[in-house]
Image (cartoon, rainbow, N blue to C red):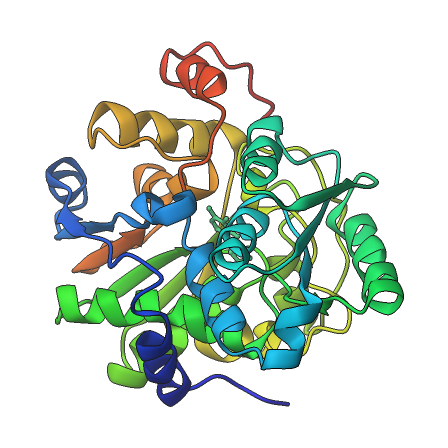
Length: 326
Ligand SMILES: *Cc1c(COP(=O)(O)O)cnc(C)c1O
């Protein structure tokens, strides 16, 4: 079993320096007062394409050889990886095909279409979309760039961890949105590689937390995919997971789960108090702090991972109009 180390992440940082934005880290006064320890927000939702996924996608594309570049890339996605990969492929003049399930919000599909990628909508889950990916890899010899379980993708996401350590040298706790675990594995490898005693806490929604269920079972397991406000955290980790399961098992100190109402409160707080527009997945760190689910030990850095929420839905949530299943 392989792993991704600080060395890989430092190499990725050099490789993608011109392709991504270094995003700010700011203090949250309201959360610091509430928690009694310094709370910082890593504003990665301001990344080009609206999420951190551009880091991993850029590193994967920059690592391809000349022959692979002529073939083009393909991925299954809950939306943000597809958008990032389409953006990175377009800059290189490469073909990109993105396969998504019907659960992916229309605003995310539209952005991918705008970037010129070919789109396939298949089935009701990430697993269904992946079946189409596998078919096209065989049939059209496209190169698969998976959303999380890939060494170049994990190393790219890890560059975000390097920026956290350089912004908050005495960081004690990092809160990371958790789905397939590419972001959490990369950040944990970077931050613990530099500061081994830092706490890294993964945060998922209660509705379909595949990594949490897998960590509890001691092996990758399948969970039913359900609609959630944190739509970017949907999908399984792959029963044949190669990297992120073992890295999350070895490097995460805890995983916290949130209700839909708690996630909505996180989105509303980000907007009302921090003046930031974030999607559900991007709000889970703030939401966990508001819900009292993180033992206060600071300084804390909470990663705001994305902002690609439908704006009509965002308005309903911040106005308290959204109907929420518990
Ligand atoms: C993909 C995504 C995540 C989860 O990342 P994983 O590497 O799959 O754990 C979190 N937040 C946003 C906004 C995402 O797009």
